[in-house]
Length: 150
Image (cartoon, rainbow, N blue to C red; front, side):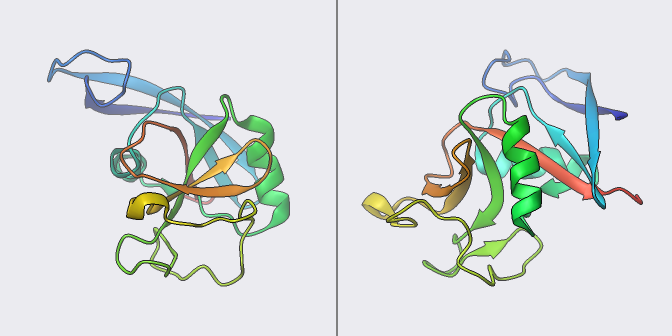
């Protein structure tokens, strides 16, 4: 387990005040395979979660295997977490935060992704081991991932 301090403004999390004072937030990283993972206790909108991960030289989680997904699902603290997967640039073209295309069908829940109301462009992973597209402005817990070598 690794520990890193993250500095970000109060107000970044749904349960924080609106102060602009920076404060340290220790991050506990868990190693699995070739990666380390940070499982948030706070909820964030997708874009803010992406920025928080970037601030600690990581990215929102990219699922590369069923084994990795099973590891993450076991650690989810609520019902879902943001994936680093979106179709904000071209509707229906799902890309990971590293710019790579979703190469296989993924683990979508039956009937998903469906872009309900034309407003679902970011993906979440549910404890039930499937994915769903939801609006990016929802507050959801998140997982940051980085190489164990970094």
